[in-house]
Each structure stands twice: as structure tokens, then as C-alpha cells.
Image (cartoon, rainbow, N blue to C red):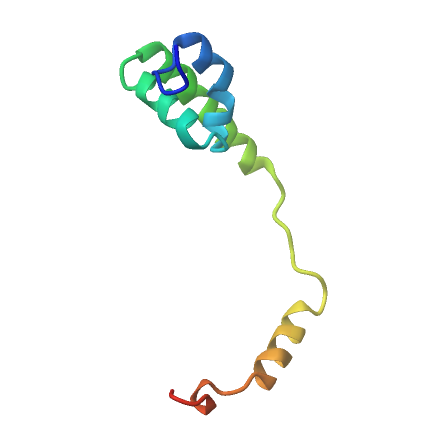
Length: 89
């Protein structure tokens, strides 16, 4: 099987977690997706991993900007030059 051939079930099993997390790129992703178009078992495996990955992401705590962030941003905006002052605008 060349690099450009469609992936088989063994390769999909190897790469399914990367696909589910959205980090599989390029021709590898295309080959895996081509296989998934025809293989219901692999589709289900990737679907389950995707559901699990999404659930794990929901468990991560939200992050708050550091104290004083909003004040610093507003101060910078107030000092920012007016877009109308640029030549040609």
C-alpha cells in the first residue's frame, strides 16, 4: 500500500484518537476519512472516541484573564490612534 492508497482498519485503529481530537492532518486525514466512508465499524469507533474527547474537553475548567486585564486593554484602546487619521482612509 502506498502513502496515497486508502487506509485499512489497522491504520484507522492506530490513528483514530488523533482523528477524533482533530490533530490528524494532510493526506493521512484524507486516507482515514476515505476508509471511514466505507467502513461502518471504524466509523463507530471514531464516533465513540470523538464523543469521549468532547466530553473530556467539557471537564476542563474555564480560564479567567489575569487581574487588571480589562483595565489594561481599555487603556490601550483609548490611546490607539483613530483609524480615520491614517492617510487614504
